Structure formats: structure tokens, C-alpha cells
Amino acid sequence: MYSRIKTAALYGIASIPVLVEVDMSPGLPVFDMVGNISTQVREGKERIRTALHNLGILLPAKRITVNLSPAKIRKDGASFDLPIALGVLSALGMVEEKRLEEYLVIGELNLSGDLLPVNGVLPIVSDAIARGIHKFIIPLSNCAEANLIEGASVYGFSKLEEVFVFLQGGNYEPFDAIKSMPQEKQYPDFRDVNGQLFLRRAAEIAAAGMHNLLLIGPPGAGKTMIAERMPSILPPLTAKEQLEISKIYSIKGLLAESGGLLRERPFRNPHHTVTKAGLTGGGLSLMPGEISLAHTGVLFLDELTEFDKDTIEVLREPMEENQIHITRQNGTVSYPSDFLLMAAMNPCNCGYYPNMQKCRCTPAMRKRYYGRLSQPLIDRIDLFVRAEPLSFDDLTQKKQNESSDAIRKRVVACHQRQYARYENEDFLHNSQIPASRIREFCALSAELEKMMEHMFEHYQFTGRTYHKILRVARTIADLDGKEQIAEAHLKEALCYRNPDEFSMEVE
Image (spheres, rainbow, N blue to C red):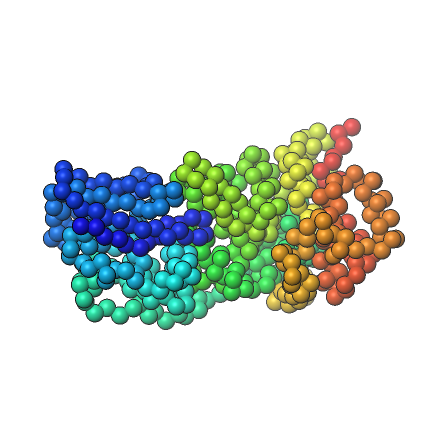
């Protein structure tokens, strides 16, 4: 007897259709599984055999061969347990194959026959709908997530026995949970930030053009406080962005925490002990890392110089390409990683430079401290801001600060200008303007060209730094509602470059 069941395998944030073929023929009693499968998939035969036994079904003394096609795609995870079990039941003649033709099946089994939730249901269902499959048999725990996709008829079960009864003609209605919108996450408000007007302005510019931002200052100056409030001034996610970031969280098994599609831009704050795989993704299952979990949002690296140098160097390509390609022995996958990098660091080892009454660091020590960051990484940061220590008057001020909502309105207006300008382009924000298009979108007058030439030669800017200054000036002009970059916009952009921080003299 031969049977076929439709299922799917994850491949980055996409899914690949997989056909489970089960053949039962005379021969030595054996249960073979083939098709470029991982150990976790291969172990499924013991879970399936025992789950069927606990359902009262004993496998016959025949040769059972299971193939997961196509063989060129690596299959990993326990989500193939249920389709394989149903394929075996169909090959035994206990379930009509015709009854299974219109369903895509995923789910993990335990030994008692319970169905356990699996990761990645959202991209699997979304892609299956695009391929013309609309009916799904999945674990009951995954139904709310699968039901977020329009057009999906989701049948959720908690036990293998329930699936068996349903396929024999039992009456089960599709899962129809109320698609209530999850409550928006409440991020801290900029209203709580006293003083630090320069930092607040830099944060607004960074959010308006999705520019990378580095804050440099002593402990207690408010660097982390500013960073934690960045998501509160970013524009709401578009419908496309909601689905894309939700797929990534689904693959990681984090979507259930939100109660629906993610509606707020993510804020990720990994500890400085994070590994390369933790930051970029990888592992045996090629899972997304922190930079992909921060997609469309903010990746905050506090105490930047404490991170392993080799670890943060891997950020360079994703920051340029807005995606990460993970290549391992198991294969190659790509995840989106279009994030706003925000980092914070002390100005020296002790943290108090340039206050020489407190600072204990020599010029050589400070130079070594900044040397922990490579120039190519520094070149990929758009804005550098020194966070000065707060005064007593700042801490005790009684006037009300500007709220996140007020700042957000200006940021959203700036984003709308960029969307209109780049409507026919393959990029959306000023920070993404290709170097080849800089003159087109960041045109300078002859007088400003001369000023930039002088600054370029004086500070020995790299080409990447020059382009970043112009992109920041473009964003400042957009915030000002101007189409032409003016002298004030360019000068302010130059203020945020602060090149001397990373070229300290040691004489």
C-alpha cells in the first residue's frame, strides 16, 4: 500500500512544500525514513510507532518506507510526526487517501499520542495559501496563530485519536477564534527624559531616516534611557511589515507571546556576552538571531566595547545588505535584518573622560579603548552623539518634556515624505540611498560642495562617511519640510559625525 500526505519544511522565513510518501510492502519488518532528514526527524519513527500503539494500532510485520520529498531540501524538527503517522494509517487502509488530499498537515507527537505545538506555523500557512492550499490539520495550540492568515480553514486537534476520528468522517468544525487585536506594547515615553536635548534631537533624526546611532558618555548620563524609548517614536508597522516580522518570531517560537501579529516595532537588547550565532542566527536548525528579531525595529548594543570584537564585526554585511545569509553544513538560509542599530559606550575605560578630575585613563589607554571598534564598523554608523553628565537643574526641572507622541508625529511625517520620494525605488529610507544615487537625492549647491570638500580633506573622511553625512543632511531637511538641503542642515549633520572621538592622539 502506498499513500501521500502534504506538509511543509521551513527555509528561512519561507516554507517549502514537502510530500510525505509512505510505502508498505512485504519484506523484513523495518521502519525506514529517507529524504535528507535530521536526527530529530528520524527519531520521529519511535514517537509515531508508540503513539499508534497507544491508539490501539499495531504496525504489521512489513517493510515500511517513508520518504520526505524533495530530497534536496534538508528537513529538520518534529513537525513531520503527524503527517507521517497519518501516512502510515492511510497505507494501512484505515484512512482514505482521498480524504487527506486537500489538507496540509503538521504537528509533533509525544508517546501518548498528544499533539504538541510546533514553530513556524505562520509562514507555513501563509505560503500554503499562496500555493492554493486552504485547509490545515495542526495542533490545537497552534490554531490561533494559523488563523491569523486570511483564507485559512484551520482544523486543530489535541490528540492523534481526534485526527483519526475526524478523517474517518467525524464532524469537526474549523477553528474560528476571535481575531482580537493584541494590546500594543507600552514603551517608556520621552516625556521622562530630562535635559539631554542634543541626544533627543539625534534620536529623532535617527528614527526619521532609520539611521544608526552611537551614544558616547559617562555612566548615568541617560544613554540607555534614550535607547529604551526609541520604539515609541518610530512609525507603526505596515501590514506587510507586521506579517514579515511575525513570521520570524513564529519560526523562533515567540509569536504566541504577542497574542497575534506583532503591531509594534521590536526592541532587542542582547547582553554583551552574546555569541555570533546568537547575534546573527544559526545553530543546527539555522534559526534567526537577534539582528533578525530586531528587523523593522531597534537593535540596541549597550556597552558596545564590551562585546567580543569578532562578534560585532559580523554586523557589517547585514547593516549594508539589510539581510543575513547563514551558511552551515546543513544548508544556507537568508533572514531579513533591516534594523536601526543603536549603541552606547563609555568615553574611556573608567567612563569619565573628558572630566580629568575623575578620569584615570591615559591617552594611550583611551586610544586602545576606542581601538576595540574597527574603522569599517564605525563607518557604518551615521550619528555620533556625546551624552554630557546631567546637571542638578536638569534632574530637578519642573517643566514638562516633549512626549513621544509629539516626536512621533514629526517622524511619521518625515517617513511619508520619504515613501513619496522613493515610491518607484527599491528602498524606503534616506539611510538606504545607494551611493550611486546620492547626487540625485542629496544634491548640494556649489557653495555647500566647497564646504564639504574642505571638511572631507580636513577630517580625511572615507567615501562611506561622506555619503552618510549627506544622507543625514537629507533627513534633517525632510524634518524641516525642505526639499533642498540647506547650509544649516549640512552643518547639523556634520555635528553628529564627531570624527575626533575615534582618532585620539597619544603624544
